Length: 433
RNA sequence: GGAGAAAUGGCAGAGUGGUCGAAUGCACCGGUCUUGAAAACCGGCGUACCGCGAGGUACCGGGGGUUCGAAUCCCUCUUUCUCCGCCA
Image 1 (cartoon, rainbow, N blue to C red):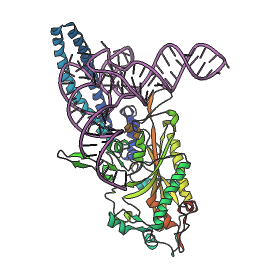
Image 2 (image 1 turned 135 degrees about the vertical axis):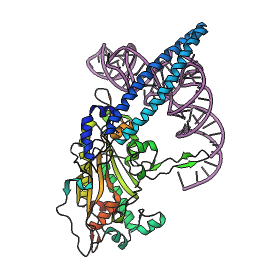
Image 3 (image 1 turned 180 degrees about the vertical axis):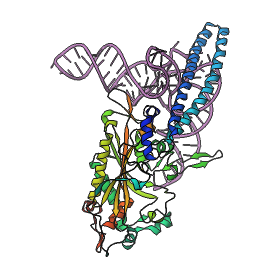
Image 4 (image 1 turned 90 degrees about the vertical axis):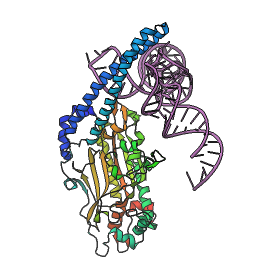
């Protein structure tokens, strides 16, 4: 979330930039400032009364020692009155804090100046294309991946339905091996680019989900394991299955003060990702196009605010390199305000062209969150002036597996079989499916 | 799952009702000394909020309570350790 001070100092800019998102709750901006004003008035009075009582308590102690009980009793009365008032102020403060937080949760991140205004994914801007011309498949080898999966017996969608339900595919044989190879390939590429590999927990608590902004914004997107237990119905296993490794990995740095010399902090990790995807339907969810569980290698950086956009470009180049090595036709989109995630200031999506489906599939999303996550995470560093400052967080998929598998199968199919790109053969140990 | 012990600043660790935002040591930063370094010595060294400032307030795992006054007493939750049980 944004800090109130930032909102105070940049009201005009915020209004203008949030306009690009089609943000409708502009009155929340003034509301936040008003609530913050109330907070200050409240604290002023409450601090003054607390100071009075602290002082009085010391006097009472001294008087007791001197045996002057009567004098002490008089002061005690005053203290008791103050305490009543302090209690009321505290209740008011809790309410104000709560309301302020709720308001701040409703205000999304401020889009970067380069973000195009727009309503939906149709307004996204093609930032770069990575192909000469879009591939056209031979009539002899022009199957969508769900048919290829059946033909070569490498993904069993029906078995997944039986075991769990729709959107939980079972990978078999070379299909499973291809996935494992891709994960390894992505992880090694990330390691070579100086990302520290981590294997985080796959379930996170509420604080973590809040830290990276999944809560309260995307609550319905996550699988939740909480259960009431006992007679009072106290919650146990109050966890969320991660929708992306961004959540556990970025939260490593929740409540952490890093050294300025530690920048840039680069982390990567492979995890399955779990998404409920409520409201999805039709051919968008066919095969691997949209599933509830998929594997992904995520790259995360904690960066210095002065250089975070350079960091974003560096991450962009990294992802682009992966797609080139996989010999897939891709394009990079700069998301418009309306399609931009709530927490992001600038996002580039990578799409790969699925030749058999003749459509673009999103395989990566690379974003700079500026201080939006760091503020919730309390992720800070001491700057050159010795002052505490919020760091910037960034992350990107490098890459998401399911759709990459779909595109590899479709684009590299031939009458003889599915060709494995050269760069991947060292990991698959086979050249063809 | 059962029984017991514990949680204090970057780390170690003292503190069992007032003079404690907290001793001491280490680490760290600045200085003296030194050709340089080390050692020694001197000084500094938590975070957030309010205030133009002086200064004030809050925080000793989280939350609540007792008290004029809580790191210290009580309740509760969480986590860690030890023992027993179960288990990949």
